[in-house]
Structures are given as C-alpha cells and as structure tokens.
Length: 121
Image (spheres, rainbow, N blue to C red):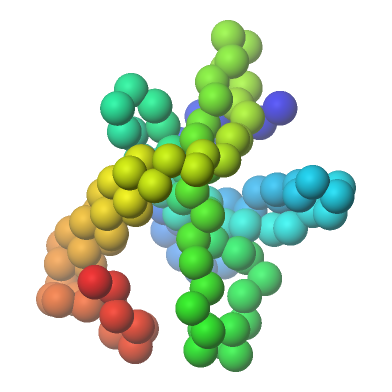
C-alpha cells in the first residue's frame, strides 16, 4: 500500500529533477510509471491526476491524456487507486484540475498559458 501523505504533501515538485513517479499495474500485471500531478477533492472523495512518466517529446504531438483515479483511503493511512466510469465525475475533476493549472500559471506570471504549445482549454 502507498502512504497517501507522501504524495499529497509532494504533489508539485519544486524542480524537474524531483518526481512523484508511481507505478500503476494493469490487468495483465504490467507496471507503468506515472507522475502524480494533483489531488482533487470532489463530492467527499479525492481523485489523483496522473500523467504517463515515460512520455517523450515525440509523444507530445499526440493527444496523451491524464489518468484520473479515485483515491480509496484505508484506516492505516495507506491508499489504493480505483478507476471510475462516471463521466460526470471525470469531467468535473478534470475541469477542476485545469482550473488549478490555469490559476497556478497565472500566479507564476505566465499569463494565459504555460508556453508549452498546447491548448489547455
């Protein structure tokens, strides 16, 4: 199990050399590295926003999507991540994540965008 506080307290690394890689396992037992981008509270639950850690600049040309997983808290402070098919929840969580990103970029003096060349709307 993963200690949720390790991720929650470090959801935004201060420099690019730090990371929040977590390995998620698919149904066939293969592990894939992801970066934890944010934790979004929604209707009494927490949702983790992940981005594939092994993406390259070539992959940036494609529409790589974030992965949104519900955080299941256990009494021993460990967590599990669980997928959801609820489109309303996924849309609401993603929209809040994008709003947080916009606010962070504006706060950092980046104005309307981050300069990455992608549309964030």
